[in-house]
Length: 534
Image (cartoon, rainbow, N blue to C red; front, side, top):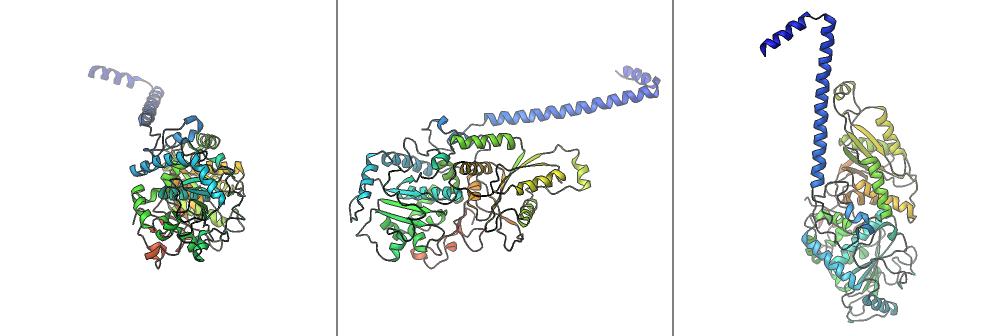
């Protein structure tokens, strides 16, 4: 081998200068090509290994038993597909007690739901509108959810009312005069949660009939001392809106429940997530601790159980995700809600979004000349930014910023906004379907930034099991400093809670009664929120 090397060396010396240079160049190119080929093959091998690992990962379509297998998959594609198609499985597992409780509830709903003998008898009694003292109600008692306000409010209140139904063994029935069936599949097998349109109490609309002045409004009757355990009405109206009084909000207390529990029909109108206040009732709290050992997972679990977009909505989600988000190495969701009038695009809000996302390293800053030189040798990562807002100018500004100037990290930032309709159009079918699709798209991101007090944002991050960065609400058209705060909980905020607690805690600030029920980060000295960290 040594002699062969000596012969090659003497032959190379005998060559002319041009031939030597040519050979050196060719040799150098071969080294680069071989190196690139090796890196490329390693990348393919890594990607292939990753794909194989993901394909071999067991698919848990039932989410740890949260869902039942008693549905036809094709009738509602999102039910069994949405939890594993686009993201890693949620690290938050439902408790065995919650799973058992849901299966028991499904059986009860099947025995008492629409088109059953029990439902027919219960509505006949309701129509007679007779007070009674001790007549047995049987096992079928009902709570009717009346639709009102925007989609985010509706989903939050639906989850709240369902949890109350679960705790009190009532049947939830959903007012379908709006567009619930155009948005969501049926959640319970072999029955329906939709309130039949011939229900005798539907001649009252939420805007005109059901309010604090309604004759059977519980809060008003309680204040007037016009209700007691010796004379039970066939129904009560529970008013839990932003203008509710403490007498309305504290229907969850033990002394109130001892009476309300005897009423066969409850009609609820709400626009707030009142789950945190349920923990003020000691009896409820005992159950809730077993249902949700990790306290900030309540909406995350209930939403994944209850809310399954219809095939039409799910088609919007999958097509948009596949077209714009699927190839990204990382996805960031930004939801922007501008409260007050005038609303629209404001530079101070745009500055706040940029300040928050760059300060928190969610979006890269812009590159200096030195950073440009360093990043040339790196393979750039793709970051997809999904913006949800009524105003397209916000995503347009982000697009312009990152298309004109390279990032300090070398990342390629692409910005997308599915819609920008400028005006909220609640109860218009296609508008609400787009809104629901965008909530689900936001829930599929890796990190999320949302506006303070936005129920749209609350649904999106909690559905995805994400702890968001919350944009503080600006005042005087000025960018807040700091611009945002990282939440320690993925639970929604109860925006207008009672000022105090139940019975023994009636003199205490409602945010200081329980260590895990505290004020919300995005409302100064207000709101209530469940925390697992305390």
